[in-house]
Image (cartoon, rainbow, N blue to C red; front, top):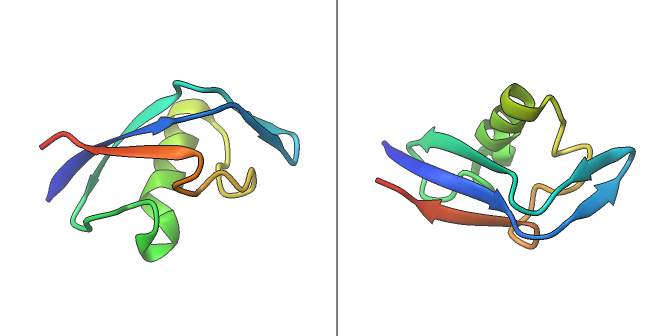
Length: 72
């Protein structure tokens, strides 16, 4: 299992939800890319826990808006 740091690359506003550049979450995953695998469920849950926002409803669950960095 690996630990990933996921960071929002640019501001994005859609469906009444705003993502700000620099927002970060940590996700532990057995997958190599938790953004695209399994519908990004782990990433969606992490943003909901930390910020109380649904990144999937914002349509921000994409490599275009998110930077993925493997920590360990």
